Length: 565
Image (cartoon, rainbow, N blue to C red; front, top):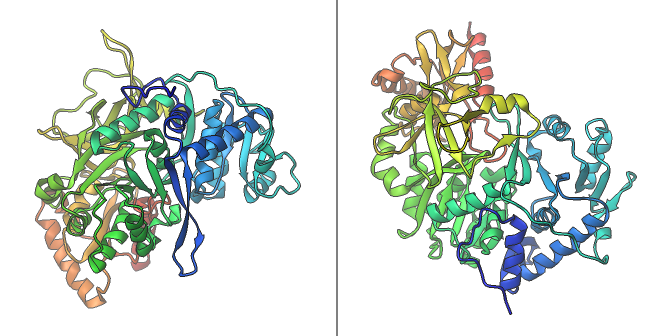
């Protein structure tokens, strides 16, 4: 007799591997993963399917192999597969035996990756041949690794191969997992500082699934297009079907929109999560082609501020019944808040052009948000006067089950980004400092004003990047702008870097300069901004291709202004 499904699908005490096993038991024939597998004769993408039963079978077989070679519960295991179904098989095989996958974005570069791995002290390493070659060359970095598994051909370094672990006897031991057990260590990209290892516990994953269900209606009936590989884990929690997008995850801004549209229509995709860079490519294509997507009921964009013009573009090309959501969060906590297109286009977008910042919606249920005074120093304990007055700009802090409890082996980061609250009554709480500046309005909505580390600190006071940029981004010839500071904090000279829309010539740029200065003079916030530099194409983050690299732009602006003097 088949076991009954739980009344609540996302129990705080369940481990991720439990969800996959349950779906495989109750719906073994249901398609779990649809993934690209080469090209058809006509040039289209060939896809393969993997059912929940097949997926669980492969997970069990590999988990048993891992167990035989000594990978055990709690063992930190560096995992470096290519995006594809193997990613999920490997992750769930490790979770099945209680091991802890360690994930680093390879796009951050070899040197930064090695720094991340050095901090982890992993005992097992699972990766392709080229990754093992790097491991051999960086022997000191990986001195704690004693179990090696090669995905593909093994060269001279010994150890095991993935294929060699398959087909053995026995089964993997699956001990009980609690919500507070360590599930994964995933490193931030370090776009505004050093990359940090975020410790995710099982409670975080189930809370995130629960809140995405509440905020965006995600459930087991969905067919989702996965453009950020790690988010595919949630499809396997829901028991839904994922379609792996035919894109390079680190180059979403270069995605082929025809291939994306073909996947959306062919598989009846109902929900998509992606970065603003990806949706800009898709929206432009749909404006030209007007391809109907009647099955698509929910679009969620996150990873960087989503410009109102992009929301408007998506609203024009998608079915009126399709919800368009902008989510706000971080590697350490996702989601924190969410807002739908009707509220953006009906009210909050216009306020961005006035310098109010970007509205990222109301905090999701179960997540508490407060605003604290701006400080570059640690704030170890909650104290009276730490929270700012309603409507005042400060640093956004968040608490709840979706929030990572700590960073891995990084005492300085924990001291810098965690606040401990010990109320007179009730349990102790931990607050995460997001490093983002913002405020809560009278309607309880959260507004994002820029990164704390990127604020421009002039002799007259601080300038917040996103607030100032919203004034200039309202000009139709400005694709995006970036406020940076030159000089020492407290005496910085503000410079606005501008990326124009295509086709703006030098003469038109000179006219635009006059108009931008006039726009700035019309708002008290930007009245003192007179220096503008045209940039051919802003540097962006590697994960979402959307967060502006203002630190790099500041160095470029300083070089440009120095060359003029």
